[in-house]
Image: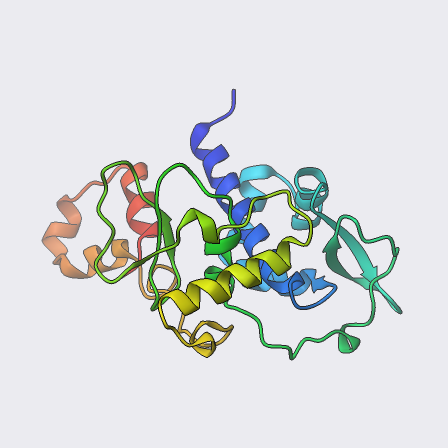
Length: 228
């Protein structure tokens, strides 16, 4: 029987892979697998534990409709991600790709590329984290709405171009500067950096309290995943 928590974790990481890949492939024909692994960070290990697969195996089995993993030309031990409809068996050398072309921050790009849900989507313009609100939920103060008209449908031709156009229109709507939303323009989200809430709790307890405190594994995992 599948564990719903494990399935949810795999789905979360899968969506992160898609958001990274879509952002990278919108400006270059390929995306180094080593770079993807670096950007996934701890989720690379989490994926291996949850799915029992290495990153390349996971992509080939679960994202074959979107991407292929191919060797880099002249560097057979180096692989890169390309779009599924790419015909070549090798991708061009990395130094020949437009790696210096400015691209939007992956979290910001994902807000316009992850398929829309039935509820409103809001974006934090300071760290680009976005959230699909629950029915009746109020958006956090300062967050901006990403209307469905700005979210590209999942199966349209030239989707990258559509996403770029939608982003340009959204920026114009809120009179925001494009440069503020490019890769490298924001520090890591506090949700992805800093110390864990678990460590903060432990640091606040004295020796006597530590000896008398018992936490279940579920609570430990929850506190460990939250950053402050």
